[in-house]
Image (cartoon, rainbow, N blue to C red; front, side, top):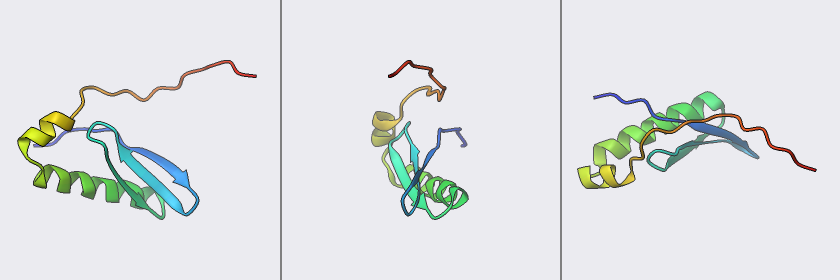
Length: 73
């Protein structure tokens, strides 16, 4: 079975951190591409090892990433 999840990749001092907020799984890498690949591997391992109960408990529904304009200053 395949599913589409969200990957958020953020630059940090020594590389990139990747997070999948739907199941709260994270990974990292030296480049954006490596962080994405490592997150994919971490997610595959999570779904392979986690019980159905844990998956059901952690898996959130639809998630959207969208820009939001706010006033400040």
